[in-house]
Length: 113
Image 1 (tube, helix red, strand yellow):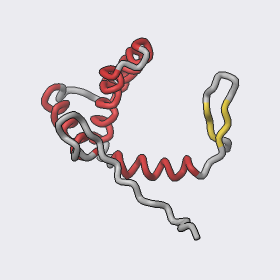
Image 2 (cartoon, rainbow, N blue to C red; image 1 turned 60 degrees about the horizontal axis):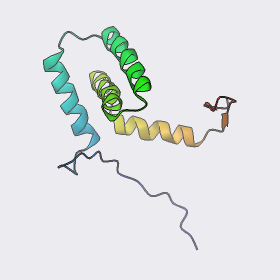
Image 3 (cartoon, rainbow, N blue to C red; image 1 turned 45 degrees about the horizontal axis):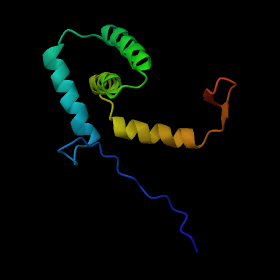
Image 4 (cartoon, helix red, strand yellow; image 1 turned 120 degrees about the vertical axis):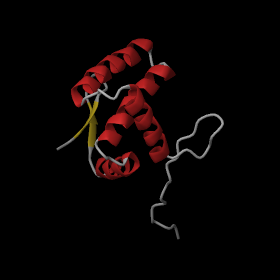
């Protein structure tokens, strides 16, 4: 008989030379760098920078450095708002798992209300 309980998955970010970096540790590293480098940043300035970085990521065809820039901004913003990224993602993933999804003619997915 198959066990129907879900297995909890621990999310861990890694980069060359360090295979134990947690999302929280990476978020803190990004935040403290940004605090020292851009102490004057505001939500508005971060949103404007975010739009520019998304455009660069799209134009680059998914260059890893451009993806990293977007992710850095998201981690910094989340930390500024005291959001635990791993917890928020897990919570939202559970919501998304319970939804029905459709794909439009352009290949864009959306949930059905």
